[in-house]
Length: 119
Length: 113
Image (cartoon, rainbow over all chains, first blue to last red; front, side):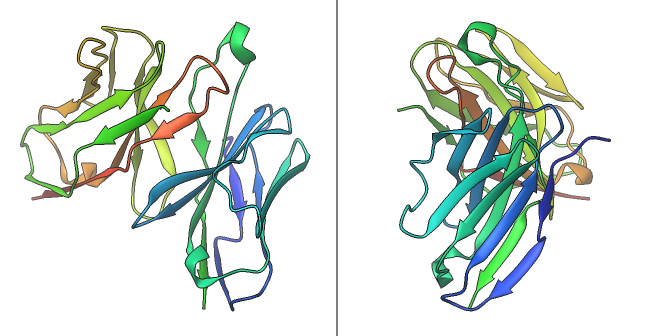
């Protein structure tokens, strides 16, 4: 049963520490999204990759956040240094994007999320 | 830019009641529209979708019709169950540009026995 896998599921850390979250997209999917969910802001798009290339990271605080795809089976989201306001659930999602000519189903498959608490 | 507006929750209903969750959108062109559901402690799952005007998406007793004239995609179910308690997200995907999904803020549904 194909699914998006995220690690860690829960992370508690202290302010100033580096946090790295990892995501394994579904095999064959070529789009990867990072979302952050909080009670106050809802779902916020942080970064979006297609074929491992970053297409949109306008929602991500550049001074402390970075997102990469070292290869097609791994996406990472790093926060350095972390702050209490970064406390949230971070979701990774993957899908199939065939480009403007081919279209795509639009369906995203979400992981179970990484709950981050920064003290 | 593209945006989605959902009714605020929580929506509280008794079992077997009729459900409507309103969703309107702003987008250029002809976006595809989606409803996702999030159960407690889980990620979002696709519930239904519609890709062009007048299409009706349906799944698990839920329905939504793509209304271009009113830019709406309201979610309905004729008889809710306790197991439907979750957060429901309306979303759109533009068919131009980067085609990213834009979500609404979510509406929490609470169904009591």
